[in-house]
Image (cartoon, rainbow, N blue to C red; front, side, top):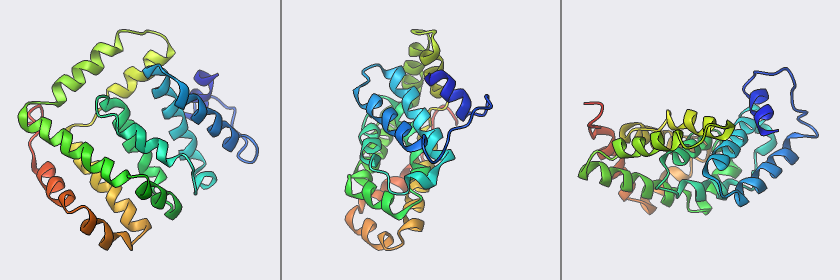
Length: 209
């Protein structure tokens, strides 16, 4: 079913979801499945599906209760594929005031800063993106089924250190655009943020230099 749903959401099938009766219950079922799913590839496919549903029906999730789950996924620093998928997902989610408020209250800013600091620290010591991408590449050949194919596709979109810094800035801009009052609160609460973002924006990714 998930295979057919992904094809539908990606525009490969003609069948469309009914926004009035199917979208919200379906998203809830996907969320429950993702929280209990132990397989990495299955969880990646579930989160990708959730992001596509959100993209097509954003008005149905203007006050989405599952924002804290995305924050928890972003904390998985050992899996850059999931981290980057969630960062992309959040660019859509943080377009409403209610979701921004939940993100901030769920330690979303702290998590974002920790991710940036961790990636930047690894990049300073050695080329962290190379082993990360090698790990993703090695995982690609472990499974040849549908879930393995989804994970393989997502692994090709892993962000470099510079790209991650840029996406982080985009997320912060989205937060400030949605909730302008946070423009004064967040820099005071997290003064380390600006310094690390500036460093990362000018850091040279050894694979790109």
